[in-house]
Image 1 (cartoon, rainbow over the protein chains, first blue to last red):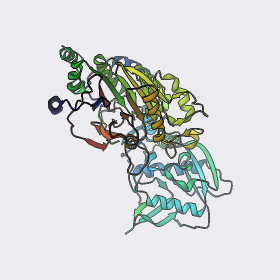
Image 2: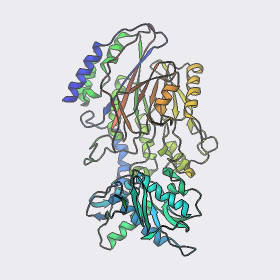
Image 3: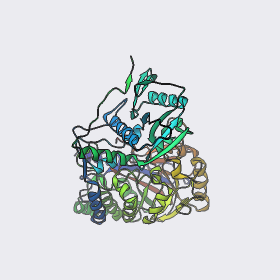
Image 4: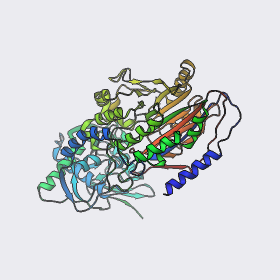
Length: 258
Length: 311
């Protein structure tokens, strides 16, 4: 109703002010425009031909994507400085990567860093379908383990502390003081600038995505051969097979210091 | 009688008044010496083949390819030669893309009768190879002027510009892509040479204007609407060019309703449009071109909305 009134009004105004202006032969065009909301009021009947072409894809979608893989007692959302979804994904990636990783020097993976922007959808409460997992992590990114110098590792902590978006981390506890790195623990231990650290992340970030320049030119890069999405799917299916609901908590792994 | 038959169809199709061409053009059409170009546009539709689900907090039951097609087909009854354009990122966002790699989006956009689309950064989420694997499902051309694919598998797959004739008007269309560095993994665009969008815009519009004698020049852009630093954007391209009339934008998911006007290098108006994201809205522009008198028509401005659409 309101929309129609507004439309009538703007129509009326535009007719009133249609004015002949000065003659400008070299400027013969006028451009007007608007956006039309594609809802059931403006377009109540969808196109039949497109609907029928969609049928094939919808059936395939239902077969592939509607399968329930897990149950979550609560919704998980991404948030800053930490969120249930941030923690859930980072924790499981660290866990699955730790199982897959065969260390050549005996040193295991120290921690996990992913990116906030890479969490593309929240997880609902209740049944989690394959579709939910694909929407959370639609990209084909793989898990990689990078060995970083102490110096680069410190830059990484400073990046996490300085970011206004909550970066998904696991195996770390980071205190932010005045927007900068105030305190850090790695696996409960103090940071040692003289040693190397191993971090699991995505190949996208490892190539410097999201301006994570500290990942460029690492001491070593090891590919685990599994996509992050597949790690999430595997973890969920395993939890379900063990009779567990999904679990995540806020534990202050990124916190503001007084 | 024009208006009457339209009303009749309206009632039959159940399409409301909000979705019709403006009164402006009806009046213009009566004058006879005016030519009209209708442009319908989308951007960042992100694999939203179906409407958003009923429980979506922002756009419940909105959008979807079939609904867009119904409106486009309806508007074609009034202007059979209208242009249907997309400013990129039709790929990625729902599992349809994961399952079919973009085949569904391109087939359905073709069925809907798109005239052209540029390429967004998400078109390369499966690499140049991923795009190459599905591009033949599109019956419309991919237009991008500042990506040099000549050393890649996509050589000859895209066009630097198009010249079309619509309603007796010669229309030039070129495309501008965003730098993929930082947005796409480097291995996914290896070999692509990125050219400066503003420089390319200037040389391409020059070609369209002087060599092809285009009367309307449209830029399909995936640069993004505006930035507070001097990164290339639609506003920057508008200010730095001379013959581009319209920029159909994308990438920043910005809602521009009505479209924004910027002054170009010759102090003439450039119109910039963008429709948010997810295919929730269809953009519509009308260009009036007076062949005889050069009489200028002025339309009242309405409330401007400058914001980024959520989700």
